[in-house]
Image (tube, rainbow, N blue to C red):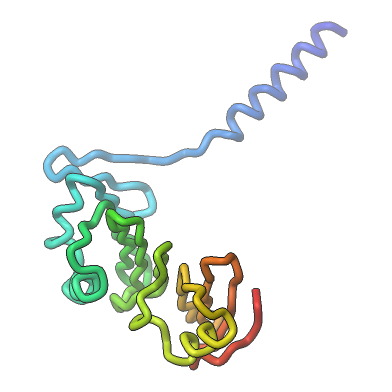
Length: 170
């Protein structure tokens, strides 16, 4: 009976240990300091972020220069999928911007408030009318659902259609 309990306990512990492990294949390329994971994603941070000038497309660089001038890139990822390349960029001030395969922004997170110029006019008008003096913390285009999600700094999440017409509080 004691052996049965020990065997059962051993099997349970082994199952727990192995099931809690996550397999992630990482290959370090010593020639360009690029880390590649098994999801065909390239991650660069800190010192490697200075290579953004070479790795990021011009449209992405132009967006960052226009809306976040003078703020250095702290980290970025290049993801390759069946639709092409997508980019995730994190700036030194905490702003995060994701770009789709057409190099258009699809998600902006800015804890100081998304710049007004990036907020569609109808969404800006709705938020100004109903949530005066509350800034938009993040803006996400969900093209698969034909909607735009706006998260406010006070924790309220709003859903709009692609024309900026209010749909619901999420």
